Image (cartoon, rainbow, N blue to C red):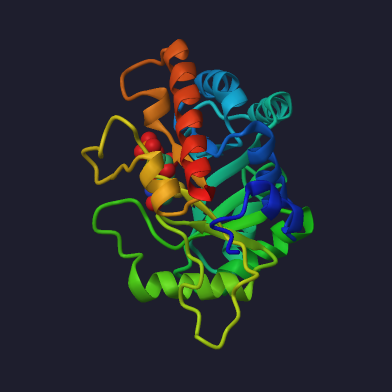
Length: 275
Ligand code: S5P
């Protein structure tokens, strides 16, 4: 059977990449395919949101470069919350440069992403050298990479043959590429008839998820957990403003309520899919 109809536990049991396996195990253990994207700019708020959504998520997605008062201790606190609540960390860095440069951006600078982020992502636009560059840093650490095969935004250029080439690139580097940021399952996409792809298991992590809104004023488009997980076969829903809100200031009680609501919706959509 394809990864579409297998349980997260079945997939965890045979996944060769340590980060993918850990994510699948966490999803099963916590009955949560919810990743919360914590796109806030103050360190305190960042940690408060994570502490409150922590029990409901398998993964926390970060953009550490938007935090105004970033210091190394923030990462130590993030790691403590990861241990307390049992979730993995995904820095949404969207690397897009030549291999040598991305290796430096991943390992060095202020953020030293590779030292703490289990999963990160990259645009396939430079070609396979971006994967080998990042793998030179991340693979020895047991990290995993997602390629952006599609995007959630209106007018995205990541369609058609671009998406197919992204999947081929992943297939050629499946020791480090664990899946995609995409809007649908990629099983067999871009494969020739002769090629056997039955054993591949790429995780599909999907942003652009909302229960109460269909988009924002800057091109974002939202679909529901049912559309994403049941109908399109995706594995993890990524939710930002649907959980922490769009207004000024954060209502921490509302954040908890929404996290619980999205966890339940994502899990119900998965149970519907596997039947
Ligand atoms: O195609 C994409 C890829 C990503 S990683 N569309 C996205 O929206 N994202 C990210 O998901 C984006 O950078 C943001 O951090 C999050 C969506 O946030 P929301 O508030 O719209 O749910």
